[in-house]
Image 1 (tube, rainbow, N blue to C red):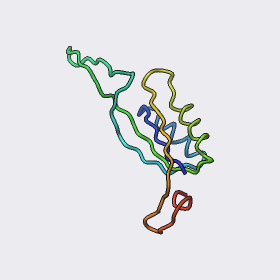
Image 2 (cartoon, rainbow, N blue to C red):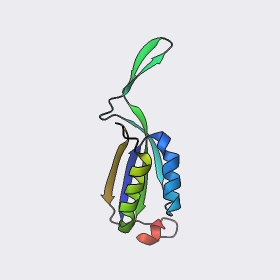
Image 3 (cartoon, rainbow, N blue to C red):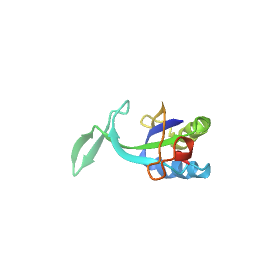
Image 4 (spheres, rainbow, N blue to C red):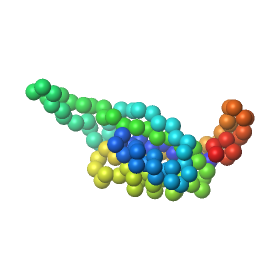
Length: 113
């Protein structure tokens, strides 16, 4: 099993959710985040005053899937969330040793279905 974490632009989330739902991925954890990387923030204008936004809003999307699904999900994330500009985000893939569903005590792949 693998945990896939994707840091994405908030405006791409609904499309990503729909695409993942189409292949049967419904278990997602979404966290509002803020960060900076090569994008380096942006300049805004409010009531005639210029200001710098150092941390830009992002979403962290997490899911745990079977190893066989990783490449397909990564391709979906890239194709759905890429705008071709700096700030599109990152994908992190972590190995998962064990998963346990608290309610039923199911373990492994049964716990993530």
